Length: 463
Ligand SMILES: *Cc1c(COP(=O)(O)O)cnc(C)c1O
Image (cartoon, rainbow, N blue to C red):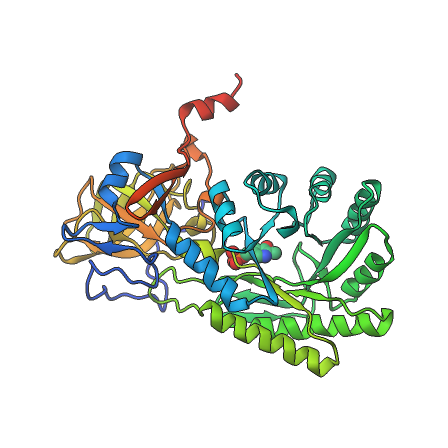
C-alpha cells in the first residue's frame, strides 16, 4: 500500500484497502499460532496466558500498556536460526529491532552474534557481557567517537558505509595500533518491498556503496591499501519484511560478481559475505513467512552455486535477522478506555497507548492483528479500528480488525508481533511514559525494562 504525505496529516477516514480481508474470522477467540508467541493459550476462564501467566495478573501487577515478551519463544527462535545456519555461518541479531541487557545475555547464551548501530547499542551490548569479537558495528554516519569506542573494545567487524568512513576507521585503528576487521556495505540494486522486488541500476538511498557505478569496487581498492583495515568481506542488506529468497538470489549473484572482480584485480579472495536481514514475519494470518531452515538452505545454495560458477571458494556466510527473531516473541497489552461506534462504518476502540509505543502503523501503514484477551466472548464480530490516546488522527494501532461487539471499557486487548521496532522506536509524544518490557517464563513474570516515570521525564527537563 502506498502512502502519500499530506500536510493535514496521515489519512484516516478511508475505506478498506483493496485486497484487504473484509470477512470476520470464523472464531474471534482463536489465537493463530502464526502471529502469537508459542506459549500463548486461552485458559479455562477464557483469558489468555503466556509463559504460564494470565494477562489479567500481568495487567494488575505491571499496568498497561506493557510489552509482554515470551522468553522461551525468543530462545527457541535464536536456536532455530543458529541450528539452521550451522557452524559454517554466523547469525547476527540486529539489535535495533529490540535491545536490552537481558536480550544480550540470551543471545550470548544461545550462540548468536550481535549487530549494533550506535554507541548506545554498543554500550548496552558490552555492559551485558557480549564478547566484543561477536559484535558488528553498522551505520551510515558513525561518529569518530563511536568508531573509537568500537575499535578500542575490539569489535569483530565494522561495516563500512562510505568513502569517508574507510579513511576514518583506518585512521582511528592506526592511531590505536589496531588492524580493524571490516566489511564494505554495497548496494546491489535490489530493493525488497515485502511481496515484490524492484531491481534498479542505481540506488537512490543513503546506505552503502553502489555496485553498478563502480563505487563498491573502488571502495574495496581503497580499503585494501590501508594498514589499519583488514577487509574480510562484502555486506548487502536489501530491505525488510521479505517473504521469499528471490531478492537474495539477485543480491548474492551481484555480490559474488564483485568478489570475482576483486580476485581478478587484486589477487585476493575475500573470505566473508553477509546478506543482511529483513526476513518477514506474520503480523496477520494473511502473512506466510519462511522458516529459518528453509531460508538457510536457500541462501547457502545460492551462494555456493554463484561461487562455484565464478570459480571462487565459498566464503563464510552471515545473516542479520532482527524482526524474524524478536518480532513474534512479544505482544502489547492494552486496556480499552473508550468505544465509539459509527453506524455503517466501524467502531473506534481507544486504548491506553498508541503511536508512542507502536509507531509502525502511522509510519508505514503496518498491519497488525488484535484480540480480546482478558476473557472470551461469543458476541458478534464488529469491524473495529484500534486507536491510541494521542492528539493525532493518524494515531492508529490496528487499522482494521474484528473484535467482539460486547467489548467494554476495562477489557484487555493484545496486539501480537510487537517485539520488533515497537519499544525500540517508542517515543515520549504527549509526554507518554514508555511502557515496560515484561518477560514471562514458566509461570513467572519479571520486568527487564521498567516503565518510565514522571521523574524520568522531569529529570531531563532542567527548567
Ligand atoms: C535493519 C537491518 C537489519 C535487520 O532487519 P530486520 O528486518 O529486522 O531483519 C539487518 N541488517 C541491517 C544492515 C539492517 O539495517
